[in-house]
Image (cartoon, rainbow, N blue to C red):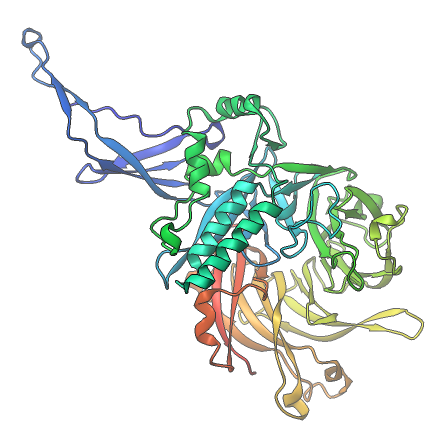
Length: 588
């Protein structure tokens, strides 16, 4: 018999399906889209079938069967389908944002499969763009969402990010209310079943979050022939959505999906519904709130310093974003721009430090220093020279100036630099020459700076070009005297061949006083990720989950003070994102 089904309506941006096949029993279908996603459908039989016999005079023995069976879409497998260029953790570690040359930004979070098993799943696609994405950074405070959209007196709200692409514009995005409700439901489902009092307090917390986030838009949409996500405001906008997405499900049904929480006050993974591929590509977009203009060519990299909220010691409430672009054979285009993301204006242009494209930047945890490097192999340290509370009150000259520089810091291009969060004067750099170098910034009595190389080492695989370095927020404390009393930073590295390694590097202030190199502490390899779990192409970035995040599954380590559990994420040119959970000994 002939059976015809119309299974799915795809948004225009997803470019449709490539192929689909039935299971041996013909009760399931698997198909894959042009964008790399794999889809599954399961048949739900219906009791009624109507059969129409064909005219026997036509010598046709077949029957045309009108089937009323219903096909239900199962959770699909998604992911980037071109090089993943950059990624950034939410300041609280709740989710991970990744951005790719496939022109999308995707949101990943841990979703419980059972009370003890978790899986990282794509639950949002905040940005679907028309240019290849190159960089991303999260801005805003830590859970300070109790401000209004207009005043923001306590600083920027959380759940915001800035992205860069092969264009001259930085774009600022703000999470819609529907996404925050969905994240709240997922977070609630991750929490083990507790007493009634605890559950009621969590419900009250979620209600407060809904109230304080009332100024946020419900969701966003991407107009036809547009590059900027717009906030959904009225029925006219809904018509624009339908034009772009084709036939869609009931919007109320989708809202219920994002609002899903456990029934009856208990946390059940079975009642948690996640967005489908259609929802990811259209309905989970974040509204674009601001554009930052000023660069003359395509953006290359971003970094941000999140200041303390206004009213706190040294707090300005602003997030300072640094950006660089491709240099067009002139020193002026190699400048770094500083932006006050709260007011949406450029507050500084850092010139004279580099002669070619700046490929990497890093703010120190206290915001005192900004390190930069790139194709000219020069590492520059920019120092904050004014102590004004609000950096955005400057008149355009900026509050950083070039304080130190090392020419030919490496023999080849420097791909990555990163400050140690626990030692703001310690900087790590990785280069195509295959070396990782550790630097200390020394400040003289007159305020002048000097960079001193503390040590250098190669990856375990030898002189493999180093493409990414990142310090974890945790450190390994010294537990003795002499050499045993040295603190070690935890440094993740990525290489051009796709390897990911974790090293312990000495960061104590007294370690560089010894002139005897043999007596000086050396870096120690803590973990080399097995090759089967690593990337098979160049690692673009490694980053550690913020230490502020605590998962219920981590409680088992609380009784063992000799161990620490860390989460490391990496992305690469193999189109993949890897997330590793590492259990390390708190000793070297």
